Amino acid sequence: MDFKPGFRFSTTDAAVLAVGLISAAVCCGITALGAVLLLFVLAHFFVFCNVIRMSRLPELIWAAAFLLLASTAILTGKPSWPIVFAAAFALTVLLIGVELRKPSYHGVLWQSINPDLPHWFQESVRSRGRASRQ
Image (cartoon, rainbow, N blue to C red; front, top):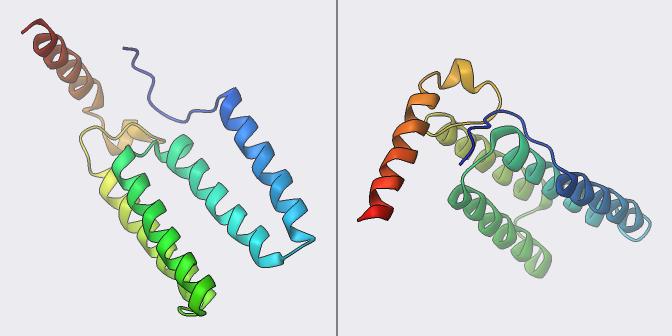
């Protein structure tokens, strides 16, 4: 396992961003709200996966909460869209705050936020090696 903390950007990330931006542009011709929703989710994908490098569970929590809020807004008109976006953004801030405090934090600015990361990584690799030999 390689130790590669910090910002990450791959060909797959570029493809997802390109498809998302093209989809939002097409969607904008149909409904501005649809384009805004796509861009909001796309921005979160980028921040969570490339900038913060968030672990899977918080990503899934955010996605489930956003789907619930957006689906409810679409089906019932409540909550209003400003509340949906504000609540999703508040959850984003909360989840990023939790992620930044983990000993495994390895996103942007990890050197100043989590200077013990190299030690944590070595211990993690060592303990995985012991577990696989048992």
